[in-house]
Image (cartoon, rainbow, N blue to C red; front, side, top):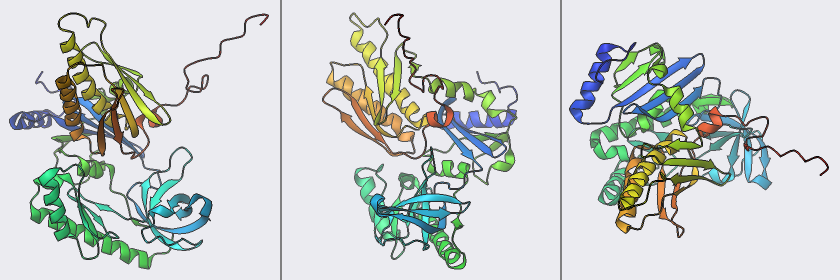
Length: 413
């Protein structure tokens, strides 16, 4: 309605709104709440929740952290070894994650990087293929060649690959991210030099410290999120200014940022099995062991001369909402979307193009493989961490999460 919300700093709200309007862009805001050791981040686009991150300050092994670990148990049958990390935690190091293919020995010191945090009784997943990430580039100290992000296509991809090969430090690999397409070469070069300096520091610390020890901590949650976003938010709103690092994004303070934008309500709705669409249709989301299936249902009134238009409208809204929920719920692996059948090839192509467009703002690599022979939209999304449902929901103690009870036996049966 154009008026500042109660409890919201008037000037910060007005500046953010006018900035978004002047640029003709969607309004992107990052809400940050910190309570004790827990930090929660909620990313909003046009006041719609698109990403939610929880960081527990008590976690020992955090993704991107580089550690000098000590090899514990070596398990040849698993083709892996367990490595002791700081904080008396163990990590799982597959042999396939060792670039030089050398077999670790018990008691040996090994430099490793946390790829995935520990979850559900599983140890943290480790790699020795170290990667140092920046907004424009990813330095691979043990790599050999220059690469371009898979998001870049055609001439852009070829140009980035050529530039990566030219900027890669001697004896190292370099990947230029899609964000570098809009950056000046001097800025990219400066970041590569900064990452190379970080690697030199890590090596120095590895020579000085005794395992297990942290060589390079993971970036703070806010910095990591801003680094990976294709578009920067117009502002950050937080209840604790001290938890926000030095960033170029304007920062404002409010006592309850999540309450102002009903983040908890949005999370509750997003985690339901049935998600209603404005068109009257709905998405039915069923996570399985092997994949996640999203079924698109339309309203009952689909007969008559406007039936094709109704189906197209519902499918277009469904793929936009599916893209948002895939990101918000942090779905990973295989995802199948059962769209409403459309007779027109042009309509199917329009829906597919709309889905790919909606995925452009997702920082996690997502590949659309097209339609299966049964008409299912086939997608894969890289697994980065636990899904939102795993973080926020627990199985019912009565039914074990199935949602069903065994019917009681009839008398005399």
